[in-house]
Image (cartoon, rainbow, N blue to C red; front, side):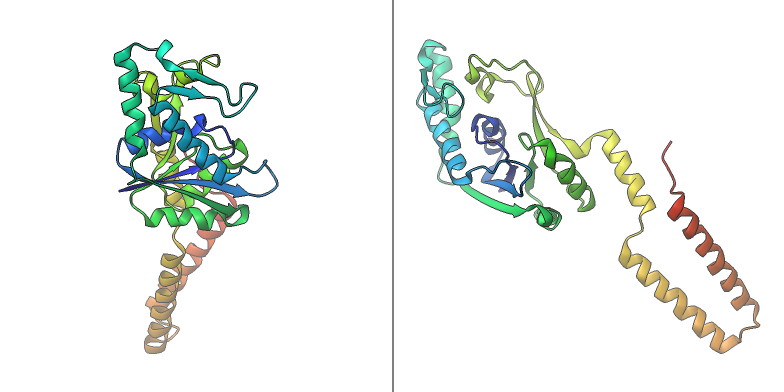
Amino acid sequence: MRDLYIFVTTDRPDQYLNSIVHGIERGTRRVVFIQVEDSKTEQVQLNLLRTSVYNLLQNLSTGFYKYYSGASKDKTVQLDGEYSDSDLAKLKAKYSLCLTDSVDWVVDRVQYLDLRRYISNFGKRESAIVDVTSVSKVYLGDIFACSLLENIDKLYTFELLVKPDFDKPWKTLIHELEEGKTYRYTNLVETPVFRDSKKSILIRTTPLLVSVVGTVLFVAVTLAATFILGFSSVFIQVVSTIGTVLGIISFVLIYFPVRGK
């Protein structure tokens, strides 16, 4: 069972449909619409959005498309004039499969300053997929940074590889698309550049717990050796020299961090 967490910043249901259908076809059984609450963007009515997405699926499963926003709001288009009988039957079947009772539809909100803590919880769920297809650029950098720091390895976006048809928006929905040819569902944290950058950061950043434990052990060994051997022993002089060198290296790395080639 997979959980699909979708960050939302628009009330247009079409924006989320492709990611949701793609996920449900591959085992998603819980869809969570997440809104970051602050004053940077206009807030979405989450319950209304959830209902609109579900209704759009129902509309398509019965063979018509409805506009939920824009100048054509509430206008409906019968799709039997757009597709052959066989293609229309496939279209209906595709969306009908997404209306199963086994899929939970949930809404959630997170305060902007709590975003990192919220995202950290995703790392505890191996099946969690985070979707940023329609999130505002205002939050995209924040979500990326939090995902990197919290070691999130499933951060996806639905990438359209063809020009959208704004006159016939149903032509841009997933029933018209083929994975790898007209769309990609891309894991943004699995690109070669991101992986290399992540490795570089991990190499340069020693985990706090390791640092604390290492420091405590180093000090404990030094004090014990000093008590047993005395300050004038060769061992203590070597340890003291090592400690001084490490201190200088740490100071240099703080102000002159190692950069990748």
